[in-house]
Image (tube, rainbow, N blue to C red; front, side, top):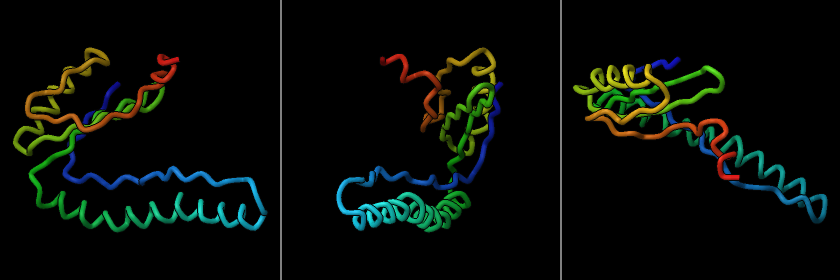
Length: 128
């Protein structure tokens, strides 16, 4: 079952770091490397999100852009996100509701821009 929501505000995402600590070498450098990892994995993403929050809030208040989110929490969560103008947002949400009621396949409605979607479970298994 899909839930469709329309919102003005889109919270900033926590950015993920691709830093990998090295476990070889002197214990001092290993500890220092892991401490640096904690900073870039947790502290820096939270600080960036806090800095981006006021910008996202002001953008949501003054922009005519609306975010249409389709969420399915049946077996594993799947979230798809579209962007549309304020005038078209209700029509886009209605079209998505009809389209997703028929199944998983959909076309992006007219007046909407497909932004992103979480990776469906098992998609990487198809590449193997």
